[in-house]
Length: 175
Length: 240
Image (cartoon, rainbow over all chains, first blue to last red; front, side, top):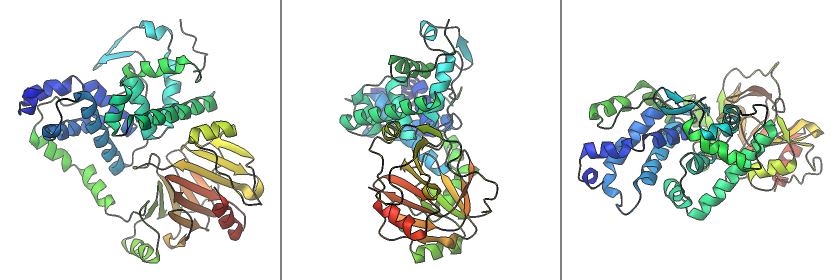
C-alpha cells in the first residue's frame, strides 16, 4: 500500500488484482448485468488510483475500493438505463473459463436453488441487491459494508434486513 | 445428490447458504484489462460512441424529485421534442394505441397483504376514499414494488420505492406529450394523464388509461382507474 500511495503503479496493480473478483461481482450486481462490468471495474481502478492520495492508510483498502466500484457502476447505470438481469453459472468458477466439480457446499445447494435465488434477486432494486451481495457474496462485516455504502452501520443493518425481507417475499411468490 | 424438486425455503438458513454460494457462481466478465492501464485506453473509453450518446440524452429535460411539471417546463419539453421524467417513469410521445395490449393487472403474482407490506418494508398505503376502501388483491408486478387492486373502477395502485438511478425505467407513450398535466398539492410532483396510452416496461407493453403519477417521500405512486377524474384525485389525496 505504501508503494502504491507513493506512485508505484505496479504495486497498485498487485493491490487491485487481489480484489478483482470482488470488484467484478459488485459492478455486475449494481449494473444488473455482467455486460460492461469489466469496463466499470477498469474505470473504478483508474478513479481509485487518482484518489489514492485521499485514502486513509489506517482503513481497510477493500471496502474503499468497492465503494469506488459501486459508485462508478451506479453512475454508469444512471447514464445507460440498464435492465437488471443477473445470471447464475452452473459449476464453480475459479477463473476465466475454469470450472470444477461439486464442492461440499454444492451437495446442499443446487444450481436450481441458485437460479431461483438469482431470479428473485433480479426483481429487487439495485440498492437491495448490492447490500445483499456485500453481505453474502463478499462476506463483509457490517462495519465494512457501512464503509462501502457510506451509511452508518445501523442504517446498513436495517437496509439488509429490508432487502432480505423483499427477497423472501419474491421467493414465496414464486413458490 | 441434491433434490432439484425442492424449492428454496426463504425462512431458513438454506437461503443464506444459497446466497453465500453465489459468489462463485455469479456470471461476471471472464476478463478485465489488467492493472497497469494505459491513459490512452481510458481516453478512448471516455470518447466511445455509447458514452457520447448517453451524455446527449442527459441534456434532455428531467423532472425528478427536485422539479415540478410546470407550463414553462412542458413548453420547453415540447420545443426540444424530448420527454418528461417523474421518478422512474418517463413520459414521451410515440405510438400510443393500446389496442390489444393487456392491462397492468395482467401477469402478476398474488401475495398476502402481509407479504406485500414486507416487500415494501412499511405498512401498505391506506386509501381513505369511500369508493375504494380495502384492496381486493395485493400482488407483485415483475417490475418490482407492490400493486394493490380494487374491483371498483378497475382501480390499481402501484407503489414502488424510488432509486437514483431508477432500477426499472417505465415509459408512458402518449400521442401528445402535452396531455400530461401537472397536478398541484399531491406529493412532491404529480402528473395526470387522462388519454389512453401505452405503458412500456422492461418486461411488458401494457394498455393504460386514466392514471395519476406522483412521487412523495422516496416513493413512486401510480393510481389508474376508470373512476371519474374527481374520484381519482380524491382517492390519491386520501392515501396515507
